[in-house]
Amino acid sequence: MRDEDLIEILHHPALELTRFYLAEIMARYFRLKVRGAHLVPKSGPAIILPNHSGFMGFDAMMICHSLRKRSGRSYKVVAHRAYFDLFQTLRIISQGLGFTEAKLANVQQVLDHGELVLLFPEGESGNFKSSLDRYKLRPFHTGFVRTALQTKAPIIPCIVIGAEESNFNLGNINLNKFINHLVVPLPLNVFPLPAKWTIEFLPPIDLSGVSAELAHDHEWVRHKAQEIQQMMQCEIDKRLRARRSIYF
Image (cartoon, rainbow, N blue to C red):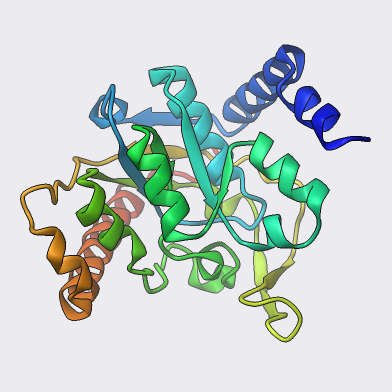
């Protein structure tokens, strides 16, 4: 099949509708509740910054579905370079699904076009960690802070609760010898369990008043990323304490 034909198929209205209803079925299966969607800007660029959980990628699917239903805005999901480097067909499919390669230049370009970017600051270590460490945030990569400073895009922290109990994972295998930064999970279940999900968007973090020159100050950037991580961890812990049940 030619690349052009595959692109046309991926953007066919029937396939778009199928993807929408599949996501809607999964949202009902998870009994998904969405809070704070009004905090996502109705126009202009923004970085959606969620905790990463569940190796199957349902967290990204449900966040994107929530954004689509409640704002109708276009967005890109920052994805591992393996989706783009392994072979051409996977690259085209990934682009057709709204993925963009995890490079700062790509993220900045999307934001410069006034779109939303869904960026998981923990990377693959977040959703491929052992379930024994569920809801314990991994160290944040700092690129999102530098990008926010350079583009003046607000950062919208996003809390996902429930995904960690839908898919359980023993840990991961590091395949860095074969493909840079490639890690694969060791799952206990593939089909997700019916845990109750909540996705909550938190108030924006506005760095537009901060000098863009600080993007080159590695210590300041690192400290700001840690500060945001600690705030999100605190919010996750609060919601876990308030949760009455996981499956029922």
